[in-house]
View 1 (cartoon, helix red, strand yellow):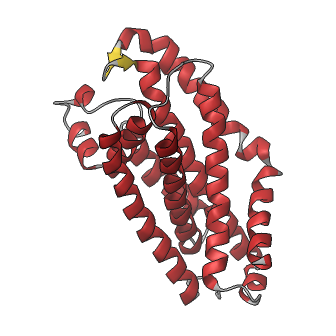
View 2: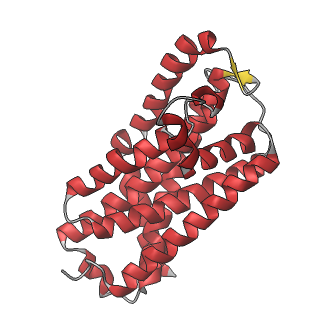
Length: 252
């Protein structure tokens, strides 16, 4: 456990030491989204699902920040270790493959939760609301961060260059998240070609709607997205550990 906790501590210190690049930018980005979409355009859009548009946006923006940061931390950390060659030190240590994978993934979870918390505090400057279920919302955030930290671990093992992480983030993760109801509801895109069907088949739509319900609304609605996230998280976590155990791209 000493080795596991030391590796976990290293992963956390790694992004805290570079907070101006890892913590501050996503918080500022969300503040800009709130200014532009919430304050400038929100009054023109009126109420969405019975709430002001700026309030409707908040859960999606928090979730987007958690997903991005949970994903990026293990992806870049693991690939950098492979690139620099110091992954060999971990592989030759007494730590098991599962312990190494979990320590790296938990580092991503911590970054995701920290950024998500800061974003939540920042949004309170622009919008006020009461939380429907704090315990469910917190559990949701942890499960989401775990799932996408595990995905980041998988991508960090898979990619053969720095651009691979950016490619997955820009052309897979970001489009799925942004088309998953962060800025709009299904009713708002009803009848719009391409956007409506893509939104309906996008699992992020139900994850985002579930988190929104956990924060602001119907607990029963939240449970579907919660269970879906747990399912995805289990798949990504098991796959990440299996790749570590098989030494995928770790010894070459």
